[in-house]
Length: 149
Ligand code: HEM
Image (cartoon, rainbow, N blue to C red; front, side, top):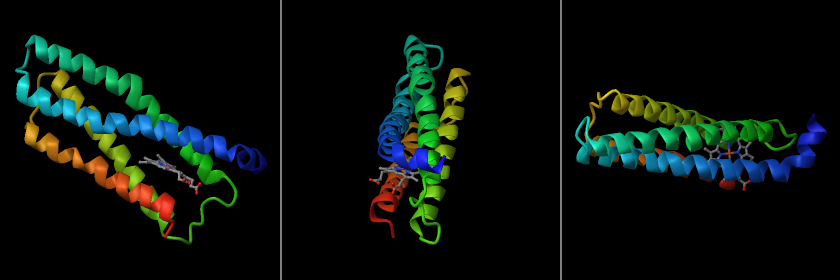
């Protein structure tokens, strides 16, 4: 298993980064959709229905598969011999941030269900603020894997 992972390492990292890009695109875009959904579409209107379709498809067709792929290829990299030195700080900052990113994904999925049930409680301003969460986590994650402090 170790030999196989060592041989395929560059390709697994390639797949990991592609999955990450797809996941992040959704993590940035879905809260923006929520901002305009909350501010511009009253419950039960045609615009409301259109936003619901866009949000459901973005989450199901792109974000969920991309998150799963990111985790699978990321864990393969973790298991590759000589890649992660747990005595350093960066694997821990990265691990904490990817868990937080996964929590954020689940939080967005729960808010999508609120919109679908006509029970959104949050304002556009609140969604704008939450939009900064993936940006901050991304900074910590990329610094962790590139700088390797
Ligand atoms: C979801 C769970 C994740 C796990 C288990 C994981 C794990 C890993 C591991 C072990 C590496 C290899 C580091 C190396 O080759 O030195 C890596 C590379 C990388 N990860 Fe992740 N990762 C995850 C999510 C993410 C996320 C969410 C991002 C971006 C926001 C990200 C961005 C990157 C990048 C850019 C690299 C390539 C760094 C390089 O040039 O070597 N990862 N990841």
